[in-house]
Amino acid sequence: MSNSSSITQFLLLAFADTRELQFLHFWLFLGIYLAALLGNGLIVTAVACDHRLHTPMYFFLLNLSLLDLGSISTILPKSMANSFWDSRAISYAGCAVQLFLFAALIVAEYCLLTVMAYDRYVAICKPLHYGTLLGSRACVHMAAAAWSTGFLYALLHTANTFSLPLCQGNAVNQFFCEIPHILKLSCSDAYLREAGLIVVSGCLALMCFFFIVLSYVQIFRAVLRIPSEQGQHKTFSTCLPHLAVVSLVISTGMFAYLKPPSLSSSSLDLVVTVLYSVIPPAVNPLIYSLRNQELKDALKTLIQSVVFQQPHLLPTSLHK
Image (cartoon, rainbow, N blue to C red; front, side, top):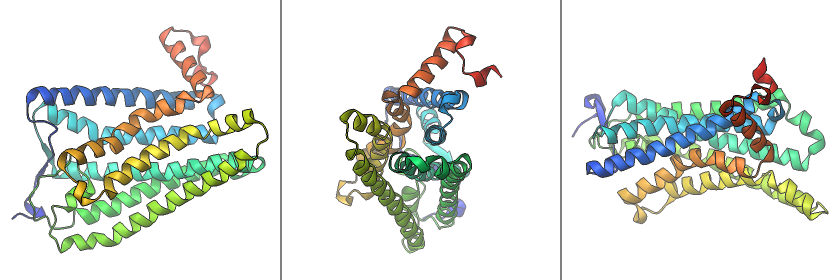
């Protein structure tokens, strides 16, 4: 039996035992990581530099890309390094920082997706009030509220989790430090201290979920009232990327945390965690750029200006 005062490092779950499979895991995660960096980096650069994209929808998309970059950078580099060097270790402080940052960024992203649902609701259901309800100051305040909620949530959970006595060793049954798996190492009676924060977390998640559902119910009703089929398609197409991202995040997250205990196994938990923590940051840029002509045009201009060295194609803000 050990306690938290004697633990100096944790042992993360390895993806494979053989060196060949460890290198395969390294190169696979490296490819996903580079794709996420490239896709989200292009969106951040395009939105920041192209004045045509200086609207609330793209401002929130920029924040979403920053959160995706942060969350995937928090967990993948350490996992890749462990596979490359045939190691499982992460320091006690490193584990706490990783847990804090990942929890903060994931919760902030969920809150931001809720704000983005509100943005689409106002744009479609209350277009005449769009400039008033979603002015620049209001957008900054809503984005700041999403980030602040995530970091406050993570601070409370991290402080509470790492104040618990750990009596079950230091082997984390996951490829990064995650709150539920650290809690499994705590003493059984100490685990009850987390119950209050779990209730708060559930209430926050349900509030955001119901707000998103309510927003889209109103959006669908408004779209169906549009007389022309072309108008319906054009209006609804602005919501499809956001709806796809929300569905991906919520479905994978719910399955990861709400699946029955009978379905739990190390391999299944590993796959599900990859689905909700690694895949969304990599595919979100693709989802948002597929059906968004403005964003595709901005990205095309940006890529042409960089690759072919054509300064006259750069957005005006880059010339300044």
